[in-house]
Image (tube, rainbow, N blue to C red; front, side, top):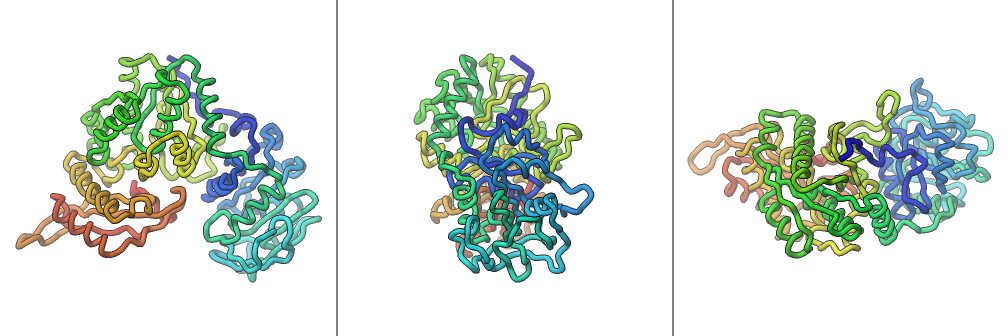
Length: 537
């Protein structure tokens, strides 16, 4: 076995993206919405990917994108350490769309002026269209766009003109038609921008002249070819969790390499009630894909005994996960590749995209580390194969359906790699795991019975490390509270708390308090993402 770790993040920008496919790249200046831009473009059936703002013009020439989008960002362009793109980008002859900070950077680098606005603009704004051509074709006058800026372009570079304005922003949309340079002061990628999708489609198809080549069928065909080319006659070990990501990957790998794939399910003791048993049975009896079951509950629990810090929890679970894989691979192997169902949001949220190779500084804020992205030890004895690494969750579901994955798994709600261990705030013990499993089982039962499972992005329970006073019968109790977390989302990057019926919340609360020993209080989390995250740890 080799000791080298190879991932897509190690590849040069010149090998970015799928082969022989049109691509639009997003230069990321630290915006939390950069991934949404990529997703919106992919919805038009054109491939898009987020890359570092440090990407040079020469590297972009090698990528040969049909268009370039400059993302928003938290900085002001006149700040001393504000991130800058290579000014040679403007001479490539490639259409460019600057979004918010990206527009301001374009204006500044090309000779215009950007200043702090007299009045910052946040939230919904009505867009008044002055020139309904090119970028604004089929965008309705007066449509709502989402603003989030404290700076404004006060003087445009030579050759630029104003296409639209708002009451507070005279230069809301600008363009240099001859050079195909465009800028918008708002965020067309967010759902609050009613005319945003039409604007993005105009950039993709009218200005960049793309064709719809990013489809599920082509992704599957190309992935199978690439997997076969990469693996050859070697063997692959898959970290199967039972979720839609790893299950889709299992099906995809099985189609590509057949019996050269070995699926291993490590039961770390943090799964939901009855899930491990159901998973193994489903794959063996219905999918005819053998699964090696490894019971490692005690050793995982021992690794996090007394640990309360969430990042330490994740890393210890991740390291132990790899340790078990290495041990079991010696028994079943040898294996050359470790396959993982890592997705694009995992990479982004682990700040794995924009690392400076010189100093390690990252553009995007690190939100959390995932054991399948950021917690891998340097002496890992596998090469990594991650065919889904550039996909969003909804894209994975489309792939799963196309290759025959049943709806039971395709529609399974996201479940974190560390499982219930990060839904128990503070120390994880056997007692707390049993309490949370039982409470979570009640949640899942009632959500299914009321037909809401597929309507919610996630619905789960969280156990808090505190106790509160209660009264049950004639006796006072001192027991744990359970937090209910029900949210809606399109991709997990942003989310809103779900407005479920009060009667349902009451039913779930009553059942948990009456059926789950050790719980006397149930509360409901009404925090959106941002400012919160979906998970509590």
